Image 1: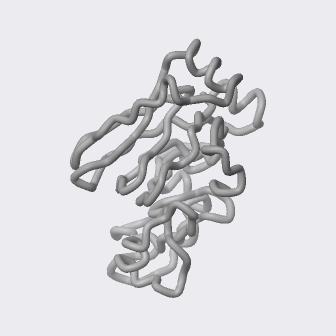
Image 2: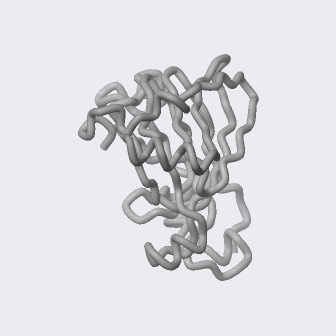
Length: 196
């Protein structure tokens, strides 16, 4: 039984598009630019550790205590929290829904997410126009539909699985998502190596 508040040990993920602000914030100057800080995760190889805030007791990984944390039996911890900060556009991407993830990827669910913005000004691109998206994919030409949108601090954006989107430079946000790392990159700005 857990009778105290738990804290996590974050996972720091270097990205080409990452932001040295995160390195400074978390005192990780010895790393390359950090793009993502996984604050709470049950994803294999990126799993956060849980410790008692008062006792310092090591409770292990979230996946070791699903029923205690969630109150039910799930194949994985269903929630993933990340802090993200960018210095350039990410790839244009889409995530699968639960049905597609189960049938094609043998995963329990897809990836619906929400972004809570922390910077004064943040840029995104989002498109749910299936016809235009298919044409842009076929032609590998997003210029006609690529129209960035500015969002401000404290804006919250809900992104259902299946919606095409990307995040622009100088954006910082908290990402709340289903526990899934399934991402289909549709366009990488002509540089396939840049966004790995």
